[in-house]
Amino acid sequence: MTNAVKANPQVALPSYPWIFSKPLPSLKQNGQDFTIPWHAAEDATVHEVELGVIMNGLRRDQVEKWEDRVGAYVLLLDMGDMAMIKNALTNGLSWTIAKHQDNFLVLGDLIRKETIHDPHNIDLLLKINGETRQSDNTGNMIFGIDKQIDYLENEANIPLIEGDLLLTGTPENIAPVREGDCLEAVMMQNGQEISKIVENKIQRAVKPSFIDHAKL
Image 1: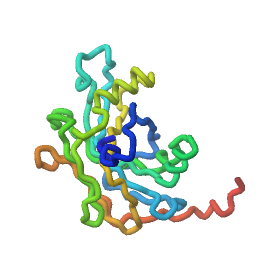
Image 2: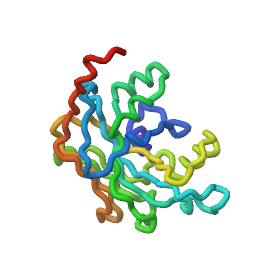
Image 3: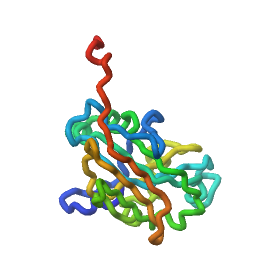
């Protein structure tokens, strides 16, 4: 999480990272069409541009620095259902359904570890229909990557293994994605573009015909 919370003085900063997970069916590659779920409420599906960190499998007791455990980086879009998230927060429930849905994690191309000089000095930008919605630097994270890894493994007792993908947080101005929108996410380093995700004319998924006939 970057300064999405820092920017609002009325919101107390969290004392520890907020954790949720994404299952494999949520993943989609850049170039595959993202669709808004057919059952999503109007303006409920929201975007979050983020830096992703892919672990290389080395354990914490095998390295001296946390960077030695990084295998690669990736630009990503973490999609969510804000109506479900608000309901979960209000009622003390899990974010699972709000975050686990099909194609709710859009991945850019893998970025070699050596390409990123400083993961805490990367610019993230997200535009919808040419208008900038999110723009910030990873140096503004509330919890740096090292702190996030430390919390997961030492406080939450969740070991990170080879291939695990850590979503590091998003800038302020999380906003809805609507049918017909064109979405562009960009990662930049020292003013140079190093990764991009483009979603053109987002569509809403069609309700499956069997849903009307299913007996639940």
